[in-house]
Image (cartoon, rainbow, N blue to C red; front, side, top):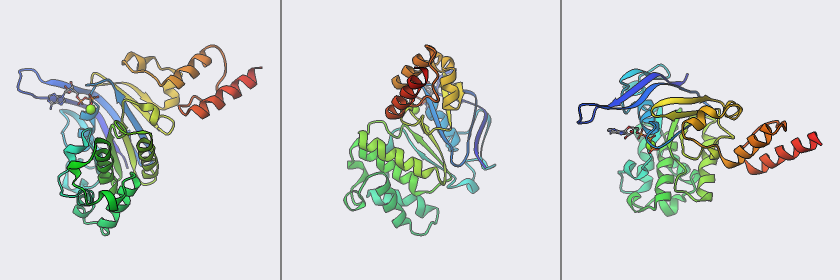
Length: 276
Ligand SMILES: Nc1ncnc2c1ncn2[C@@H]1O[C@H](COP(=O)(O)OP(=O)(O)OP(=O)(O)O)[C@@H](O)[C@H]1O
Ligand SMILES: [Mg+2]
């Protein structure tokens, strides 16, 4: 059981004689309880990949399958939930509560209203305060949280999020990280981000795109063991990771490389203790 892209390419036709090849021979797999981080420079194909995985676009070459089904097929309805990069484009209902409730109600789930309240609370929006608001009057950060609540409420086995923490304050980022950590107990979660530091410590895999092709795919520890393909794709590792890699390259043995500053300090102090 997985959401799988195999040898997927996608070309936007456009009105010109040549199309834009946005993805080239991409392989990716997302299983329940996975947290896959997809990163890459602007225009590298991240959002296109998400639309293909959700069945909103059909590959020009290769296949996408969700638990063996075509993600755009009727029987795959409700299998993949997606949060777009511009969350405000996702809203349509008169109130935020009605918007968040639409997904579960449409899928015929019982308790759609309670599910919507629960999802709003999970992302840090009090349903009594925000539920009755027009989603179009929300601030950017509130809208992002609201859109994530809409996806969570669907309880889909695969959840795809395009830059879920961009534009959020520290509190907002933390509540989204916590919500996604909880979500992994029942779903596979794929996060597109320009700031992988937020997710690398929890990630099961990292996929870096470069001009539509996979430049790196592996676990975070594999990434830290040989970051060259990642940096060649125009990407930078978080400063706290770079510090640890410099210390490691200077000959000190580190048990593991981490993004969390407190755990990184612990790891460096342990290494220093062992070497003195
Ligand atoms: N509707 C479209 N028609 C034509 N070309 C498109 C279309 N949407 C995207 N593209 C092109 O496809 C490529 C990949 O776009 P995509 O939106 O997937 O990038 P991205 O990695 O999500 O970028 P960002 O980090 O800026 O969100 C870009 O060159 C983009 O200009
Ligand atoms: Mg994008």
